Amino acid sequence: MAWESIVLGMTVKQLVTNIIYAAVLIAVGIVLGQFVKYILKKIVEKSEFKVSQRSFISLFISIVKWSIYVLFLNFGLIQLGIPQFTDWLTNILVVIPALVGALLLIGVGFAIASYLKEVVEDSRINGWQVLSEILFIFVNFVFIIFAFKTALISLDTAIVNYLLLIAAGAAALGISLWYAKKKR
Image 1: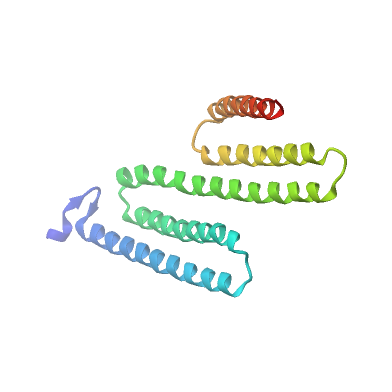
Image 2: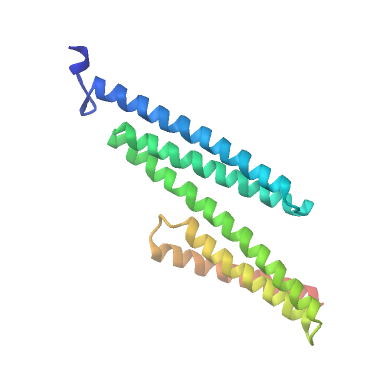
């Protein structure tokens, strides 16, 4: 009879079963996240990366691990089957992968910009100093815009575009003032 009570639109038995399944899914996510972290660390240890790249690789491994945690936490919450609770937390959990993706975009953009700056500096063509700085700033700027759009994916497109316009204007002003001060 106690198993027949209705709680949140389901019987107590269904609720307990869903809680157990959700807990199992979250535990599997934690174990899988730790396993992937272990495998990635072993791969990094066997490869020959410079010391300066290790912090970026460590960040990447943490991002992968936490993405797995969040994914399985989301699966667990969906398994609970409590719409009032699940919808609210799922909306919050959508933001985390977006922020992670934005951080990855910024990291990749910085790596590409640094590489291109070095290529231009090595070429020693006329005006290479200015060209390398402009290329570095431009590539970072493009990736930051993509990262900004990724991080704010849950907002309305018009709002994101207005925020980007304001940020681009502020960045252009800041870069102009920095460059003018540098030339004095």
